[in-house]
Amino acid sequence: MLFEKFRQVLVHNILGLDDTPHRIAFGVLLGFVVAFTPTIGFQIILYVTIATLLRANKLSGIPILFLTNPVTAVPVYWFCWKVGGLALGTPTGEGDAPNADALDALFTGKDTVEGAKVLLTAEFWERAVATAVELGAELWVGSFIVGFALGIPFYFITIAAVRAFRRAKAKIREQIQRRSSVPPPAAP
Image (cartoon, rainbow, N blue to C red; front, side, top):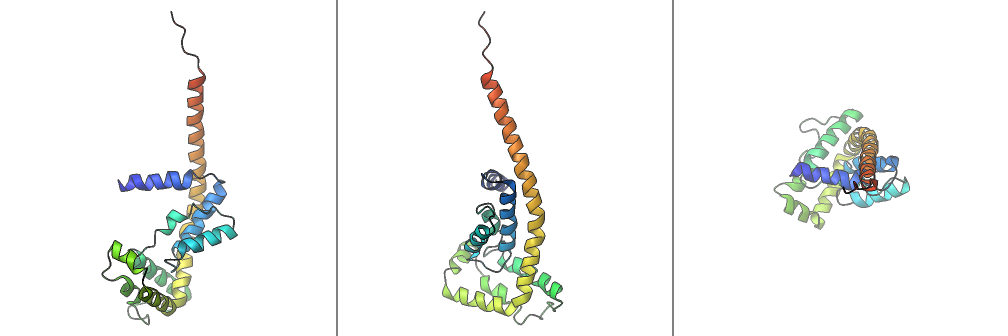
């Protein structure tokens, strides 16, 4: 069921878009970059703005943005923070962060519904901004590294997939057209 839903999103929402393969793939790349930035709540607005300015497809990256959500934020941003710390040469080991539990505290005890509701509170946004400032450069640098590290390969994968999808669709259309143009056999 989950795989079927994923396939449906992929085929209908990304591969089936009416745009050039480059613009669709560029939208996916930008979707990965924005998805990994610590901008939950603003990601769609940020993505559409960037996609518009850079002339990427405005729809193809939106499904990617949902990789980061209240349920996945803590592990995703923790990983990005670690990557950023390695890239900047700053310590990110146990207890090295000014507040190592800050990201976890944002969502502790929240299930999916509660996690979504918490986004509507001023308290959440105050804590989220304070956490982003506290974790600072490591989180942002790591987010861009991870976003581009995933986005660049998926750019090429998406171009190939869009082209293959369009070839298969054209082949099916051609077969249907051939069948409908063949006259029925003559009656004896």
